[in-house]
Length: 97
Image (cartoon, rainbow, N blue to C red; front, side, top):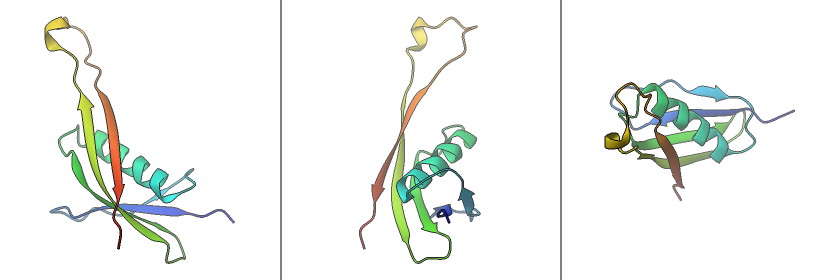
């Protein structure tokens, strides 16, 4: 049976519900998937935090600190009618116990 990964954004003012992350094969991929969705949903307003990832039914848990780094396009070179495309990268750092 395939491992089922769960992830949860932690250390926030408001509790964030855990989510099952389909189609991933390891803790880091699950963390990246959840953080990418979270940053997108927040419109890039929250750019750092922590995420806890575990495998359902096992004690295999990891915590990652994360930060989102964005490359903003040069606004002077844009026409006001153009859609702005922002490039971003999620950086994960595993916490060691």
